[in-house]
Image (cartoon, rainbow, N blue to C red):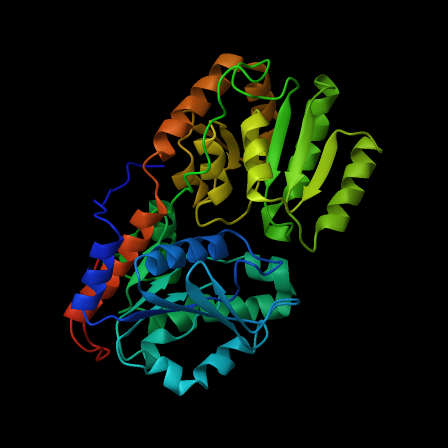
Length: 407
């Protein structure tokens, strides 16, 4: 993580007036999934957090997304409207068929490019910005197999960049920005780095609650918070913990989250540890329980192969919990190596976990520094800076396909 630019937030009323003065009366958000979708992750949480800030400021906000089992086609949440139509693939043509929605005057468009873009540069008549959390690359084949995966990567790496060269791109960190330039060929001048926020509810526990003096578990506790999909590579953490538990029998791994890989990961856990309590799968938990887990864990681990940032890393950091993470773009922005956590290669996970479990001074130092470092991250700042880009786009005049990009 590098030093982050900060923006002075002057309050919801100022945000609303700033947008109104730019003739932006509403914000249309296009996202593949909603935060309440069972497969939702950090990108969806990021989107919902910004939407709440805008809605709290009195801005009309509409989130247009795909349907999900058990969820209604329309809902009001945190002051903004959610409309769910179309499946995970048909949501794209379903949206493009809604010409009245797309061409309403006074609308600013915020699209979330999650592998498949919404092609806003082709149809948006008002100001538009595009959030790209990370380059998917090999994630395509991990999720969809070789045939569909190659096609998806072709769209992401060859077709979409041609359409988005003049678009206004937002991304959470410098390393992902560099990845967008290097792998997708997007111009550096079109990309704005806007770090994510951390909900104020995530904070360190009151002192004196546990053996560690800060509410930590009395036994060595490792935490994973992630969707159970292939790109999160949770199996690497389980195998690393097998090595750790051999030398530290009281160590425990708790896994928060759910997803299509859960059954396979549970089988792997049984094959490694039998039916012992060394690995506990907690599933999805409410925020209060998640905070308790962050506060009691000795460290957080993420073995992901692709991340835009890793919101769980920052949430844990806000609770004073350091992280051991794979050295990939995104993680390099969320973690300062040897300062707020450890950046390692996949084969080094076991050694890094053990190092922090046995070195109490190092673990506490990294945790304290992590909490200090993320204290500046606020969703108000993330939403405000994204809105600023919409305003800048409005000031640049109507979209002609020839205007330059802004930062």
